[in-house]
Length: 133
Figure 1 (tube, rainbow, N blue to C red):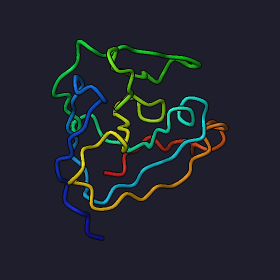
Figure 2 (cartoon, one colour):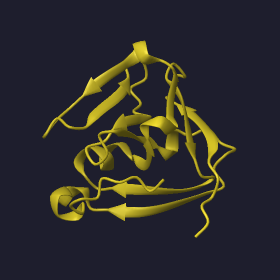
Figure 3 (tube, one colour):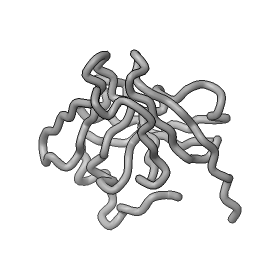
Figure 4 (cartoon, one colour):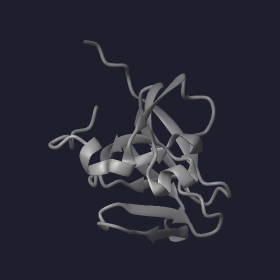
């Protein structure tokens, strides 16, 4: 099975203070979660390893929000309020990037699949903490 090469994708928040870069394939898979926070914000999850994520600017503008188990660290721009990435409960050693916050031009295709986050414990397979790449 051949793997698609990684390319650089950049993105950020609405006001531009928070900017990041990820290394991921040009054809991206994203999860659309129906949990309370994701459904209200329209978040599309693209999971990347921490070594494939680079915060370019805006560390000083980030605010953190946690709830429930406190494992996920939701990072918002304190200026415009956009959550362009965060540390997810499912992959606390990586990042979930909002596909809707990626700049145009590097994503060739975005394949979105549904995830039942309202029933996270039953939906997320035990032992699945591995990254796809």
